[in-house]
Length: 440
Image (cartoon, rainbow, N blue to C red; front, side, top):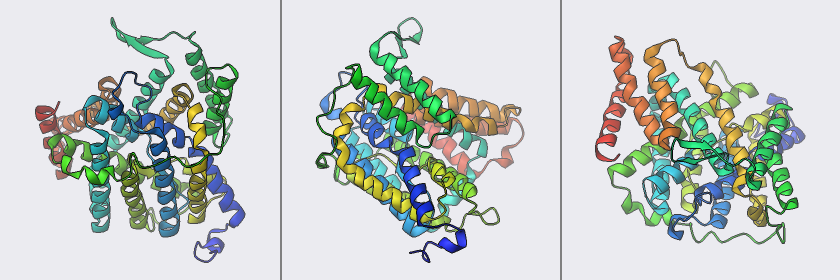
């Protein structure tokens, strides 16, 4: 095992790798609770039951997808990078695809499955890297930042901090409401832990906030901590059973969005974490194809068991900071996700007030890319800004991406820089114009 993971060459050992894998797990374990609440649209009242995914089944699917993805990344690509259903893309899946577009969650899972299969084909053919490289860097940063603002907005709504206002569309909620106060406590606590550099600060904050909620009787105390694994039957295989429903322009846009977001989530995370761990060689990522394949395969598995797109997690950087250097750390993280399957009774104490702080703070982390955009160049600033601002205002990641990708060729051409635009960007320009004509 030591030889396979190159412990000696990378100056590591079992203890460092285990601690690194554990640290990564604690840093991203919040997804086990946030994802079921997000995909079930638990924060949206008065929805028909058929629009909501079963929370227990999604909990199991989340753990399985995270475990499979992390194990594949560890054993095949040998990187200390863990995977799980992605934040941001799960919000798009729920709030845009299901809630706004009215697409059944079963069909949305089929779209996720197809995007994963396309990912695998693109990875094996080498086209995935070409497509990523065709998108201008500034728009990549803008998409990441826009998703961050979007999920923070959702977090504020779930907390009751921002509410509907007929006069101004949105406004400040009743901050004296007990559940809102609990969410505010969670935000403050998360900020304190993150500023102090506590590994797994988001996860620990959720636990403490849930305990405080139980103390003040805002959350029901669970009757047990360890229990049987929930049934995955409500979601398992639905992606395969509804493939005949994806042949529409509407679903084409959804699948492209799934592809696009996972493209940049994965590419950005791989480069960032590999750099941090000192694994980059001559500014290139060794075994990049294997890492991308692990990501794509995890998405396929996740869709089949019943969750949104699985992607590489930037929280893996916490494990690297704790000493992880090899894929063995990812194997440890994957094993811990499987062990977590037995703690489903805790789902009941993870309410929207408890998860809202996680959404808000993850949004803060995601907008860090804003500083990398050249705001001095107006032809870049316009599409980048519109991408970011339209996402929360339209309550749609896809719409934000569409607006930005339409304006980019226009502003660049007007600036006399049309030759700098990659042909693929012109293709996306046409696709998104058709999106607004025939779908929106």
